[in-house]
Image 1 (cartoon, each protein chain N blue to C red):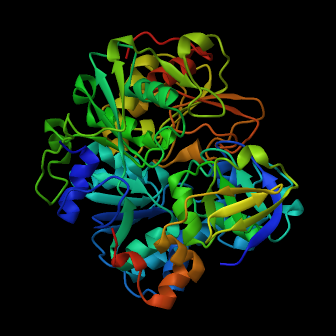
Image 2 (image 1 turned 90 degrees about the vertical axis):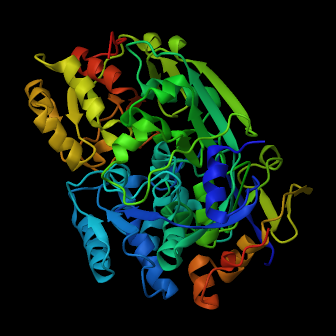
Length: 171
Length: 414
């Protein structure tokens, strides 16, 4: 996967799926472009008008906590965000992100060394991110999740392979 | 060395001892999506090009989140669900049937040793029946509907051991809120939470489900409780597989253990806007209360309604109060016991079984600056539909007292 380079939008700890996409919208439509107008609305009401394609989100601990709504990573992706790098993620949000083709990376050291407006370079396959001239490394994404990401998400993955990579698990 | 309850259930499925951290693939015994997640699941299922739902006896849809529909957008999504369930010949539980996490055990989808997935984060509730049960997203659910299997990372387990007897004004909700305050909103992320000890063994199924329901509020993948005679009694006549007793081994390798003396517990409130912002009710006495909600998959069961009636019988509420039974079965039980009549006489607005105001879509969105005492499981900013409202989570007993007094007060007895 190629280099992801863009401007940073920084958020704090415990960014819940209610802040990412308030529940009241998700019950009315599954039009992703319509939903994306409300991306991150609970944390920053103007986010969707400010964000540019290719930008990255940096989050604190427990990013994406709360409900299982897949609309959360979907609206982040459809707002133009290319990846989310956080100290840690809530587990359902983590799974959902790969399934919808949004790269998410756990890199706790990055958080205190980057601010909104900085430019980030994320090398997903190499497991490194560069901010303010400093390089931070992270644990590589497990190969089967990387494969789902490279296929463009779980739907494309299944269409392409006619099955799921985990049906032949490796220990 | 022994196994945790999570490891025991997984080992029965994969035929060997699992190692925490490894990825395993397990067959699914029950899979559920609701009106907040099923439409996206259908979209993914169809986009995948999947043709058939793997097992129409194990799949279920529930319309509970905005139920009945409050607007035409939601109505269209509900119709999409009904059409899909009909086309694939599996059960859809429509408006008025109740909340997914109450319906699955009532209708026999959940049994000890089973693996349950739900496209809802509170699917961890079913661990109260010693099932491995966890929340997943819509596209993961589409994968399950297509293949009947899913990958899981074998979790480590945090044990919460509650010994002794709880005081008369303390409910299982207070025990779980206290635990979340201790462990933190992300203290159990990626981990299973196993509840054990004398106080848990003595709890009814209603009380146990309140505990496991909120495991996700500390980040837990699932909440688990051993199956015993109390579990058997609840499941009898509901499940069509043999009942088994399953429990975690005391000498298993736990990531951490939180020990609680039940006798030391007191009524708790989870304060805005984080579930782990937990304080004793005593610290907030006198706080004015505008709205009370008694219901949800956390506390909308018969036991909870009985407690509310015990407090409100023959009296009038001072705060506006909404009560919603968690399911049709509970609603009928409450009617037979005369509970609904008492609640209505006391001035409560009693509504249709479903998620109600918990998810902020309808049925009681609070106004700016209002204080809400709710028996639900989340108080995130905006959760109940208004980011300027203050939601406090409490037991049904504490909530009923708040309804009666119009302010927060330490309840006397359950």
